[in-house]
Image (cartoon, rainbow, N blue to C red):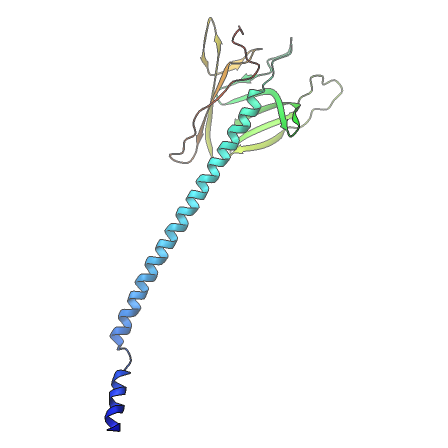
Length: 205
């Protein structure tokens, strides 16, 4: 009787066969591979979304800076060259540097895309009377990276009527400046920026 009970217990406690172990190992391997691929896809998607978010924030900051600088463009002093000159891919102007307590410093600034595809703002303090003063060096601020090109156009009086033109070199200010930014990323777009200088007047001729 004791011998039969022991034999029954031994049969119930028998281990897995080699085939069962191989099958379980394969199942675990397949599950691990699927989970790893899913995690990798999730990480890549998160990283792509993060880069897109950072790029959008950078472009928004770029637009805000351009609006602050260009909207406060200054008129030329009598007898001096135009304070605002623009080409199709760059512009230079006299404006005001934003500060916490107001727009206290007048600056001369230029905006354009450099050889490294960065949209750069170059500026220095503007002195109307430069007699006896050393020229200051320009500061450079990177407004955005990975920019393929920038295209600017200017709306104002053209001959006897108002219209858009690809350059501006006059004592008065254009009524509107349109800025088109083309990022390098495939499929990336940024809406055109329209800026009206505060001192622009429709009566300019």
